[in-house]
Length: 100
Image (cartoon, rainbow, N blue to C red; front, side, top):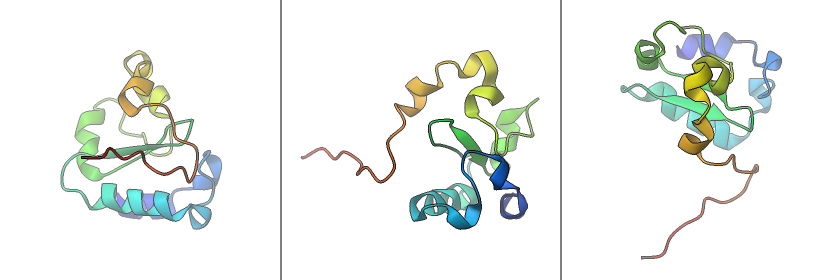
């Protein structure tokens, strides 16, 4: 899948060209692609999806999910996706931390 991600035409998605992705997105994509377990990343307000090879088994009838909106991929089942992912965070906003 890493090869498909590298050659995918990301310009056709809300993520834009991969060369212009922020460091955080590149790092998150590497984590997903290097993971041995099924993993997917839904990035941005459109929840543009990037996933690893193991995630294909979860996709079932929707194997062509790369670069598509998570909501579009999962259809009715994805309507609650905002609940799963939380509200999209604005770019460069620090992750909230809790104190012990």
